[in-house]
Length: 250
Picture 1 (tube, rainbow, N blue to C red):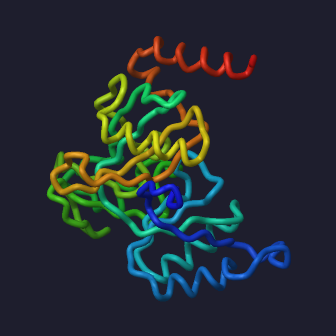
Picture 2: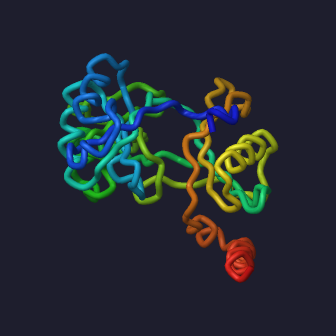
């Protein structure tokens, strides 16, 4: 995508296990990842390159947290993507045959304070598969919270990191098509990769939220469509499956 001039979140790929290192070119081994982390500006955002559902997609606060992350992720994955941590409004555009079929805005997972429990206790009460081991939380004003803070009753706490449904995220503003700025960058992304069906995740980094500063987070060649099920948009689901069958039967 970079070669095609598509703005996207920069990143470095590193292997997290030395298995088969003799078969790879140098520069991306665990030792290289640690050297990169030692000189990096934090926080970082890390995720496995073969993961799904937001598992092991985490905000990493410092070098010690990065070392802990390497140990945990290496038990289940072989390589990770390390990126700068960006904060912006996240959109998904579903592209089909060069056109934006639908789009929606992703919402970060959140929880509510009860006036008694600390943030650490509130997180511990959540299902474990929805809470990254490294969790950053902000209040509704955008201020970072410490684990010992006791949010007021009903206070909205936003959990930074993946906005995937499996991680407790949500979706809003589902609509057919897409605003042209989102459609334009999504179209450029899928054209660069050569996909006719894809979910393109995009950050709007503009201070005003006016879609004037867009960057591609990732392009998913097998995007979930449960948001359409939740919204009762079976017409769009039928359109997607018809396109799949037509392509398969060519």
